[in-house]
Image 1: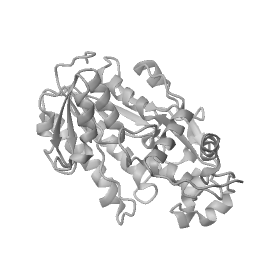
Image 2: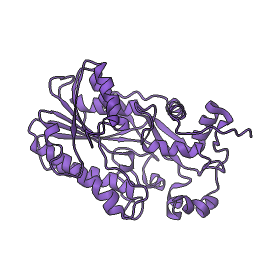
Image 3: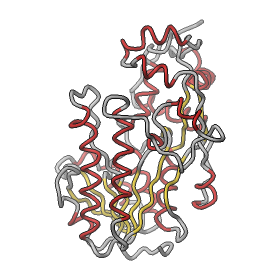
Image 4: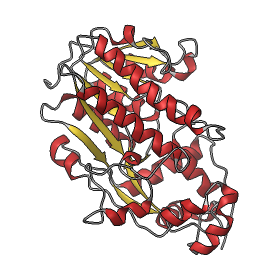
Amino acid sequence: MSEGNTTSPILVTGATGYIASWVIQKLLEQGFTVHGTVRSLAKKTSYQHLEKIAAQTSGTLKFFEANLLTEGSFDTAMQGCEIVLHMASPFVVTNYKDAIKDIIEPAIIGTENVLNSVNRTESVKRVIVTSSIASTYGDAVDILQTSQNIFDESHWNTTSSTTHQPYPYSKVMAERKAWDMAKAQNRWDLICINPALVLGPSLTAGTQSGSVEVLQQFANGMTLAGVPAMWNGIVDVRDVADAHIAAAFSSTASGRYIISGGSLSLMEMGKILRKNFGNFYPFPRNQLPKIAFKAFGPAFGFSRAFVDKNMGYPIFFNANKSRKELGMNYRDIEVSLVEHFQQMIDDGLVKKFIFLK
C-alpha cells in the first residue's frame, strides 16, 4: 500500500462507533474522502457529530446505509475504495436467549457479508478488521499456557465456546472467518487490529462502548463491597484509531496487531479513580476473596466456572509488534481512565454520592 494516497475513498463500516468516529476524524483531518456506513440514514442524530467534524476539515464524508446481516448491503458504499476499515459489529444483546443466534452467528455472518462485498469490488487492495484482544485468549488462566507469561499475536482463544464466554467466542470465530476468506484469494490483504479494553474520550455523549459498562460498575455501588482480583489490558481509543490508520497505509504492515497500553487490575483502577475524584463515588476499597466472589458472583452474571478461570491470574499483553511496525507510542492508560470517567460525569452517565470513609 502507498502511504497518504488521498485520491481513492476509504470505507469505514460502523461509522458512528466509539473507535470508528475517531478514525474518521483523523482521516478527514488528513484530507481523505471517507465513505461511512450507518444502520439508518434516517437517524441523523447518530451521525451529526461526524457531519460537524467533516465541515471543519479538508476531507469529504459521504454516508451510506448498510446492514451487516444483509448480503450485498456494502457493495454501493465500497465502490472505488482501495482500503476498507471494517469496524462495525452486530448489536450485542446482553440478555440473550440463544448465544448462537443472538451473538455468534451475527458476528460471523456480518464479517462474511462485508468480505463478500470486498471480493466483488475490484478496487479494494487492503482490509483492516477490528477484532479484539478476546481473540487471543478466552480466560485469564490461559496465561499459564504461554511461554513467557504474556499474550502475543501468536496466541488464539481456544477455550471460549457457545456455552462458556460466548461473546469472546464470537470475536475469535469472526476473525478466523476473515482470515479464511483472505487466504482464499490473492487480490486484497488482511490486517486485524486486536485492541484491549478501550478507554478514553468519546466524540459523542453517552457512547455505547463496552468500557462504559465497566466504569459504571465503579460508580453505581456494585463494587463498593470490593472487587475480584481480575486484570484488564487497557488502551486509549485515540491509539486504537492511530493503529487502524497506520495499518491501512504501511507497506510493511501484516498479520495481527495487539493494541494495548498496559494492564491494570480492577483494584488499581478503583484506586486511580479515587485519587482523582475523591470520595464522591463508591469506588472499591477492598479486594474480594475468591471464595466470596464465587459464592455471590452468579447473582451478578458471573458463573463459578468464570470465577475459577479468571480470578487471581494477572494478564499482560505484548504490544511490541505494533510499536515496531506501526510506530505506536502508547498514551498513559491511567490518564485515559480518568478522562473517560470525567466524560461520563459530564454526560450524566454517573451520579455523585458522598462516601467519606
